Every structure is written in C-alpha cells, then in structure tokens.
Image (cartoon, rainbow, N blue to C red; front, side, top):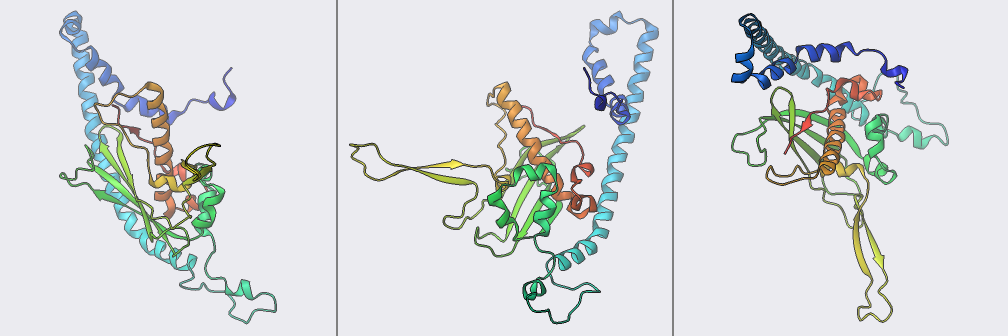
Length: 309
C-alpha cells in the first residue's frame, strides 16, 4: 500500500520528464531502417517534427544553463563581503554592536573571554541530516577548530591527467586553526565533473591528512597477544578503518573502465558517491542561510550519477 506521502504527483519531476530527452532517445532507439520503413508517410512526417521540437528545446536548455551559470557567478561575487563579515564575527576578529565591554562579574571570566561564536561550524554541520550521520563523537573535538569553509569552481586543464574525462569541477576548502590532531591548516576536496546532458561525477580527490602521532581519527590500532608457545613475543598489531567525518577527504575510488565490477558493488559505490556528493553540497551551500538552519540539501541539485563502467 502506498503511503499518503507518495500519493501526490510531483509536478516538477513530471515537467522534467516531459522536457527531457526521454522521448527523443526512445525515437533514436527505434530509428533504424526497418522501423522507418514501416512508418506511414504521415507518421514519418510527425516524427520529424517531434525531433525538431526536441532540438529546439535542447537549444533553449543550453542557453538556460549558460545564463544560470553567469547569474551564479555574479551573485557569488556579491556574497563575498557577507562571507567575510561572517568569518570575522564567527572567529572574533571584529565585535558586533551592542556587545558589552564592561568588566565581567566575579565568576563570569570565562564567558567574558569568549570571542566570536564557539563551535559555529560544528553546530551548523551537525544540524544537517547527511553530515550528522558522518560526524562521530571522536570527530567533534577536531571539528571545533574548523574556522571557515570556502568553495569555488575550477577550470580543468586538458592536460591534467588526474581529471579523466572531466570538463569542469569545483573545489572545497576547510580552514582549521592550529590543533592537536593534524598538521594541515587547510583540507581540500575537488570534484571533477563531466558536463553532458546531466552532470556526471568522474572522480573526487581529497587532501591527505597529516595526522599527529596517536591522533588519527579514521583508523584504530588493534593489538593482540601472541599465541602461547609462539616464537614472536611481540603483540600483533592490526590497523582497522573506522567511521569518521574525515573519511570525506579519502573519497571512494571509481574503477577504471576496463575493470569489471559486480552489480552489488556498483550499487554500493553509487551510494557512497552520492553521500560524498551530498556532503560537498552542504559545503557549497555554507554561504546560504539555509545551510545554517540545516536545510542545505534543499539548495543542492539531484546528486549526479557516478560514471558508469
């Protein structure tokens, strides 16, 4: 039985389906000599007109995407002064009007010394459903040192051997204060996209985190005592990967085209890629007020398919 939540027709999805290339692709799939020969002259003419309608639609859609990107770039520049102000307030670089500078009462010294908005980014990230699932308890102390998130589009050079077939991409930058967990001051993540009829995620590359001794949050070391009578008296150590937000910077790898992959493994990979992309969308939306309210996914588009092998 279908639940009430799914009973309503999604008009946006319906409109997208009607204006997509589904019809044209269906026509192309059947557009062989035998099929065309079986069409009556009148139906054949109608098919030709339908193909022209789809072609006209494609031209308009291309202009739409071109204008939308120009609009995004325009407003991204207009957002920058707001991002700068937010950074300064969050990190205590400047003070806002109305904050008292009077000496603190006895016992309030700690509160008086607080600058900015403590744990701003940790709180914002935990308010997002997708991110909240990826943030583990052991990650929280490290994420308290996160002081800013930035993103920008990147032009992919044709001679970049890391990009594969990608034609465009975007880069995320996570800025951290000095902390007792890793040496990096900036952790980055770059998504390489193939711009076809729909965005196609070619691959993603993250920063290699330089963990300080004994502070790695993505692995744990297991020690086992050697068996009785064993010549090796030293404990046996084994490294095991654990869940952590910081695994975001070690994204799942897409197999080479000539590498075979089981259907179940492909589905799991697709799921991991979509989750990885969702986190990226939150980072991009960090400049929007929705991100601070936990609604980051609303301004992200449908996650792109990962490249099919």
